[in-house]
Image 1 (cartoon, rainbow, N blue to C red):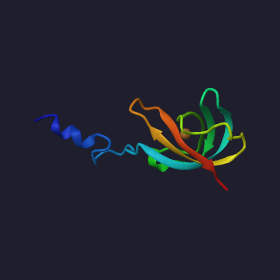
Image 2 (image 1 turned 60 degrees about the vertical axis):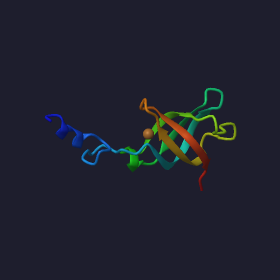
Image 3 (image 1 turned 135 degrees about the horizontal axis):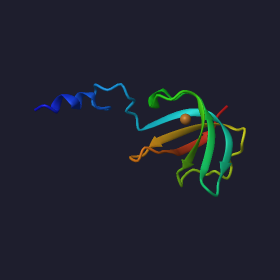
Image 4 (image 1 turned 90 degrees about the vertical axis):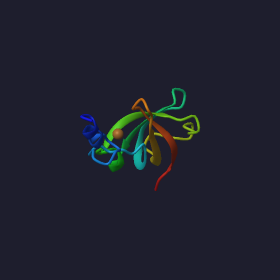
Length: 97
Ligand SMILES: [Cu+2]
């Protein structure tokens, strides 16, 4: 019985403070993009669902995301998912105004 109490402190079980979201949408500016490597570097706005401040970061893009039309300097809306290994992948990307 001694370990039961620890369950309440695990993220996603109601007691923890760590964000439990596995996907979130945000906007950002494209800094660089490699359609060949399927990578995109975004300077994004804060993402409260993940507990992130605004930052510049490189992410992998899912196969469904067409990076060939994405240009550095463009403002985009994107959806990110968090994988079971803790890495983040762009699942959707569209122009933002
Ligand atoms: Cu980030």
